[in-house]
Image (cartoon, rainbow over all chains, first blue to last red; front, side, top):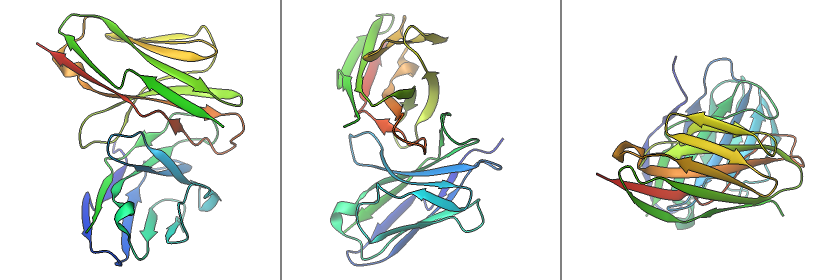
Length: 114
Length: 112
């Protein structure tokens, strides 16, 4: 079946621009996660949704970062007034259940802020 | 603070030369330990989940083991197609969301 998809795959933004990154999870998956991966590092947790409810946003680095999942399926990660330090790969993952269960990752969106 | 450390950072092997990757963790109540494989330009691909000390899982040339402080990913007779970055991650008991805490990864290169 179809896996997690993300779009765009690559995004170049000028400093100060707003960007929106989309995630289509595996159909029927309850849990959705966003992670940020810097070059040469492991992914770092940003935020978690259970259906449409955002239950954990403790990893969002600043109030410029905002995520939503209004209908419990597709999710959007929005970054306002992008800064150079926002350059990274943004990964989305989904899981069929809550709690302990493996997460399935999308290919990521590589964001470059110039 | 929950933490995951992987070693070595990079590993070069000849085809057929077996070795092990290490993942050390400190976590407040381990709920699960995960191994992922990541190829360049792609998202992490799930390999294994381990839940308790003494548990082992195998898949082709890979075998993952777990103790109370660390996990090992053993690679037997590797092939060039095993070249990738291997990521270890934990789910802590203190989290009720299932978020993963990753190590920095071990980049494996297998030469023919």
